[in-house]
Length: 249
Image (cartoon, rainbow, N blue to C red; front, side, top):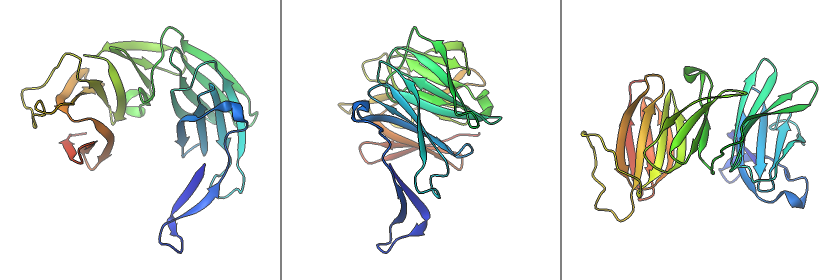
């Protein structure tokens, strides 16, 4: 793991690399599949193909070598991680291909407790995300044609989607779901760009979680990433374009 300090510049004019540390405690852990950080709690969690979840704590920018503790060993690869910090207790949401659970980890005792949210489904990489206070800090998991809402220790409800969801993002009360072009197509009348002529397109649907409605739906080239700033949701497309949506948050 490398940590860069963007407030400092090295001799080459690049952000200063303030730390390099090995995070795999043994060779059997396999490759890193996902990582999540929480600035308020000052911790990082890492998931591996072996099913191991590690938590890294202490100030990663100041302490020469941060402490690492294994908090979970599953039989399936870890596909998603998210951290929620509450009253000195860290809640780590974890997904595999067949299970969704949470891990409570206490700073003082440095002990973890696993709580299974649902063992009847899981999700793939990029198909889980954590909401903020606008949606009661729920954890969202996309599985096949549904998106499930999860609290710390229980699954609340699910909403149907229009196809096989391949990635989801959370932005200020909205869930942005990407699904493949083989799924049935639902597009709003006010389509901004028509990408049907392209050989490979991706469906995007934006759900307004608080008002329980579909805010937007369209066809676009495959999306590489999403950035939200100043009321814009910017979709970075694989054809080099940036597609911007304006929302009244």
